[in-house]
Amino acid sequence: MSDWCITLVLTMTHPTRSTDAREERGRQLARAAQIRRVGRRWAVPSQTRASERYLVDVEGAACTCPDYAEYRGTCKHQHAVLFWIAWGRDVGEDGSVTETVTIKRRTYPQKDWRAYDASQAHEKEYVERLLRALCAGVPQPPRTPGPGRRPLAIGDEVFSAVMKIYTRLPSRRVESDLHEAAARGHLGRVAHYTSLQKFLADPATTPILTSLVEQSAAPLAVIEAGQYAVDSSGFSTAVYDRWFSQKHGKLYSKNAWVKLHVMVGTVTHAVTSALVTSGGDCPQLPELVRRTRAHHDVRELSADGAYSSVRNHDVLDALRVEAFIPFNPNAKVNPKAPAWSRHLYEFLMNQEKFLQHYHRRSNIETTFAMIKAKLGAAVATRKPTAQANEVLAKCVAHNLCCVVKAIFTAGLAPTFWPDAPAVPPTPALAPAEASSDSDDDDEPGAP
Ligand SMILES: [Zn+2]
Image (cartoon, rainbow, N blue to C red; front, side, top):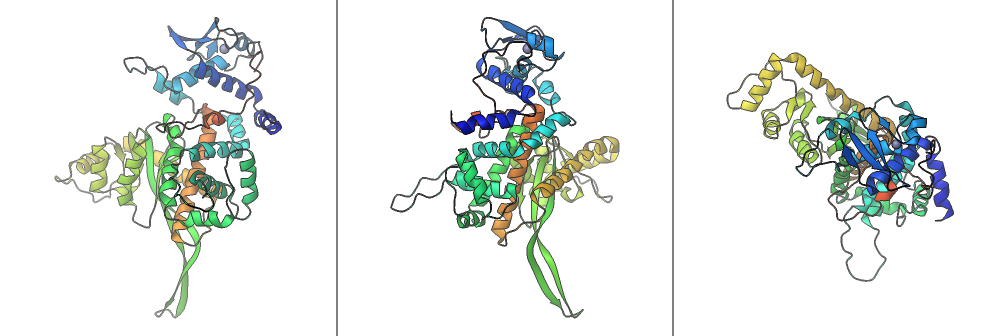
């Protein structure tokens, strides 16, 4: 191993050294070992003495190992069982997944400030590594044979574009960050800044970024509670429309807006699908739901009154998604629209239940606030395609931040492109940890 690798490991594990190390060992155990259920406990093999087993009580958060006896916190065996369950490896032959759901969802503390601080401190390092894994799955079209310089890999172009948006640096100034990322092995080749600008202005980039928004939120599906929300928001541009009003004898101007339509998970605030279009809000709902359902189990959806249409209620009803969309005061039961009529009836008869669920919608405002505060409420480019791509790249960067938070606070072990054949960089996703120091790990107090 080279020197830089060792340095990186030390820097990244510093603040929460022992917690991270236990978690990482747990992850290794869950990957390598056979964990078995024994009554209401789980038998986890010792990492050093394969013949020995420790018994983990997940509900009581206890273990029979010496480390737990001394430290009384979550030991690596408990982490191993939580990963084992979260990865669905406890699914029985008959397909039963007893208790998996409750345990999976139990672990998303909102106020674990220590874990949250650690996630913030390491965010950039993790975003870079996650982005590399995400870009590794971007399909690369075959090169057209002939002379000339090898074109840049699309994965590298996407990596550069999203890093530019995440760092909020102009194309020229982001180059030094990209060279550093290349030195760390996260990027193949650094493009000239003009290629980066061209890539962002290319209409072919839009579907790539749209799919990356969805892929980057996919690992968070296990944390979501089936509740999602839909809304739109504008990003301001540097482009002004100016016109002269004959009536008032004045020159008027206004900002042009880029309109982003999104669906978000109300627990993690990740953008599960995104569309950039100047079209109205209401017609975007079916497509946003369709795209989100590719990776998420959508059970209920909150949206404001702008999305209340016969078609949207029909679509949600057909997909068995419970709709929490308020109706106009003058909405009427329509025999030709049974789903709409039924939802209207439920809305009128059970306002209390409606409001409890509709309240989840506020999480989408939080999401927009998070994106705009961290990545900017405006777009820097002038061409409409580049503006749309810039906003989509903001969504990808935001989702990666959500994944980082979930790694630290919920022990998420993300995998992108689960259906793709083999994505090599998965090991880079584990919180960095030296793998060489596993010989003393069962001693009390050892991390
Ligand atoms: Zn233990």
